[in-house]
Image (cartoon, rainbow, N blue to C red; front, top):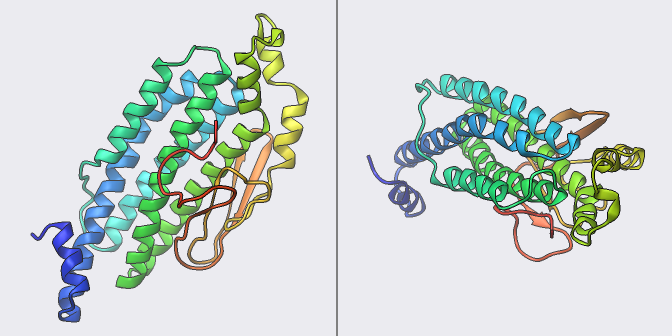
Length: 273
């Protein structure tokens, strides 16, 4: 079988439609195996991130996305089935590296600190941006190849990843980053036994509720996050504690941009911590 690089080169150099379709199908399957590997790896790794979190809000965000990730694994198996391919994995070095990065931030931050939560959010958003790029590319290929059912299934997972990325940004901007900064300045309000009450005051919950409504393609006040547009029209909502985040997808295609900073957002954190 030709390498992925040769498949791409053959596609852009021309040739018969049948040859191009076959090359793109092989590319699609290879990428599908990679994200299948990634999601299964995250099912194993995400509980550790949730357990390491300091605040209930950050812990719950990871726990809820873990359930979504389990559903995404099942959804990918349906994608394989829809194109008459056996579900199989292919090692994804990118997700292995990101998992190692998450382990490192846990090791390098103090347990029970807001700095730990800020670092976990950054690590989580690095993963989300990888997945958004992977699912966005797969969605485009599925549409091009006429895999209608596969495209619809992939779109659902794509929306979930975007919603999680936005949720993590909201957590960082509503209280985690500022309180991590105060923590570094030895704010007496963080001292035990007041730590948990200080993290979970009503003002935070009010701010999270106020920021709950979001629209895929734009997010008011989303200065340090990424703005994405997705494929066919989908309306999803993910509930985190007392908050419901609603996503309405926009124009077909995957086009990440950043508001308030330069460069495209495909990998890496968006927090500006």
